[in-house]
Length: 196
Image (cartoon, rainbow, N blue to C red; front, side, top):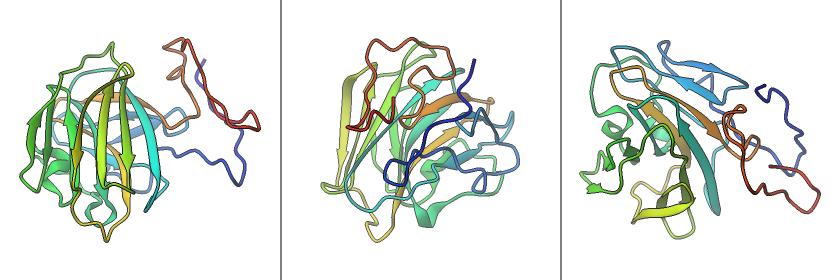
C-alpha cells in the first residue's frame, strides 16, 4: 500500500515532486512521489520546496534505468518537452547523476562515480552553506561536487529521464518504504516523532 497521506506540521514540511513544473510527458503519482518520464523525449520535474541555505537530503529508488537525480537552479526550470540526451544537465546550474555513474552539468563538469541499478537507493545531499552536492548509493557516499555555480538562485532536488521512459520513486522524508517496495531497517523522526 502506498502512502498517500503524511502528517505535516508548519515546522516540519516534506517536499514532493512539483506537478506545476513538469512537461506534459511526465506523469506523477502516489502523492507526487512517483515519477515516470516520456518514451521518446526527456522529461523532468523539481521538488516543491525551494532552498537557499542549510543542508537538505532526498532519496530516489529507480524503478527503471534511464533516471537521473541532482539539483537545479530555479532559473533553469523546464516545462517543455524536448528531445535531447542531456536532460536537465543542458540547463544552467544543474548537476545530475545519471544511472551510468556520470555526473554532468551545463557548466561542463564531467566526472564519473558509481553506476546504479533498480535495486539501489540513491541519496542526494545538497549543502547550500558550502556550495556542494553529494551522492550516496545505499547509504555510502559516492562523491561530492563543490563550487556550485549560479548561487544567486535557489536550488531544488530534481529528477530527469533519458529517452527511454525512466521512472523512479522519491523520498523527501515522508516514505522510507518507497511506496511499500522497501523495508527500511532504521527510520528517523524529529523530536516530536514526525517524519520517517
